[in-house]
Amino acid sequence: MKTLVWVEHDGKAVKDATLAVVTAASKLGEVHLLVAGSGVDAVAKEAAQIAGVGKVHVADNAAFDHNLPENVAPLVAELMASHDAFLAPATTTGKNIAPRVAALLDVMQISEILSVEGPKTFTRPIYAGNAIATVESSDAKLVLTVRGTAFDKAATSGGSGTVEAVGAGSDAGISSFVGAEIAKSERPELTSAKIIVSGGRALGSSEKYQEVIVPLADKLNAALGASRAAVDAGYVPNDYQVGQTGKIVAPQVYFAIGISGAIQHLAGMKDSKTIVAINKDEDAPIFQVADFGLVADLFNAVPELTGKI
Amino acid sequence: MKILVPVKRVLDYNVKPRVKSDGTGVDLANVKMSMNPFDEIGIEEAIRLKEKGVATEVVAISVGPQKAQETLRTALAMGADRAILVQTDDDVEPLALAKIFKAIADAEAPGLVILGKQAIDGDNNQTGQMLAALTGWAQGTFASAVNVDGDHVSVTREVDGGLETVKLKLPAIVTTDLRLNEPRYASLPNIMKAKSKPLDTKTPADYGVDTTPRVKTVKVSEPPVRSAGVKVADVDELVGKLKAMGVHS
Image 1: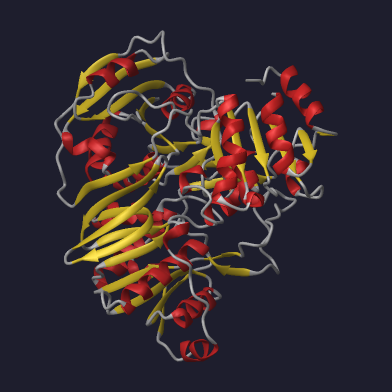
Image 2: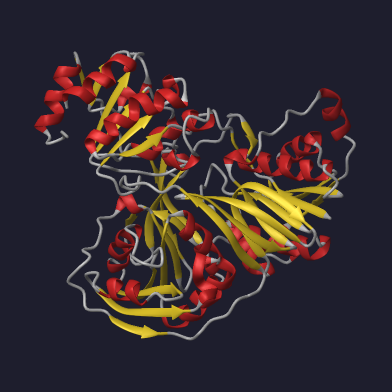
């Protein structure tokens, strides 16, 4: 089987989310990549180094900048004439593009796969991860999005892909990129961090989040996260949210601080290697999944932890 | 401008799903069903656009069993003007849903179709994008703000790193994210009024759409259970455990 993997990048470098997709694709067959955007030579070169990669298709056109699906989906659909499966990361970019490709190909997409069980059989979460479905496609081609935390990352070196330019593509002229407010930070990205420190509603305010959560994260070089309750209460921006409707994470260590552990939050972090929970309420559901639970007032315990770790 | 809003009847947000012991799916017998929360946000957004004078008519659509009428009545009670039930007892996949909505869009010629970004049962997150592909219209997914300006709409999208704004030519497809708005509750007088609002009943065949599933569910199982670990007595014990794992500054 020949697969085509969407390379997520920022114009300069390949994003980590791509690497797990390469691993998933390699379970199906030959791995080809697609790098789309203008001035993406460096990205293509980097992509060709990823272990196990065959061809790297490069579509160099400004119409593909900002990943506008109106322009990108027809390009992918065209390339799918010579591929059997299209795989994209289950990021907001992948989720925006892949279904548009699937419909152009008259294929029913399989979203957020967790495992490859056979050439057309996959597992995926339904009902916010409260159930796992094993599904089998009957379509001639496959369109898949891949949950990044469910697959190991392919090595970023050792590959010897061949870079090949593909047809120019065009601007459909129905959509344009206006701007973005992307949080700039020196911290590791939430979805690829080794350690995450998350705060919940019990913090009570944005100031307390800064005062209590941030120093611990600084000390551990950790990413910052939050529960939906903390985001909705305005303590932190929406891109901090861990959970079924936010980001799905699986770090080595996840600190849940003042987070009760609603189903929707657990769905986003329960694959973390080690979960540490600090909460005043000893009956909080978070303790049912925590490897290390500390029943304590977070306003005392967290600064103490920050001081001693 | 007319706005179409598809709505789905799903297991209520607050009910914990239980996997059937025979592994064929999730038990939906005798449990509370409600409108998919993301679709409720879609109805709310459409009504607000009508209240602002941008939209002239809001049409709610549901593909589902006869009971999906209740979901449509909820949409009408919130403020939608009329409803279309495409009645079927089959579980209709996003691709077939998108084909049905495409046929309805062809007939109704809306300026916007606002869909929930995903239904909280299948969690597919596909239908809006697929409808955009089939109609050839632009798409603004995971919206946290929608502003119609002449023959364009600006959509602010919740993306992984923060927010992004795109400008789309109308007609266009929008899918809703959680922070777009807070849906209203229907008042009792409006619930009464909704009973007399028009609700058409159709079938997928009326739109020439084959709803035969492309993806077969082999089985549905419980997710692996994570067992609780230990409670530590104090911060010192926690620091010890963490250091033993190599976690320290």
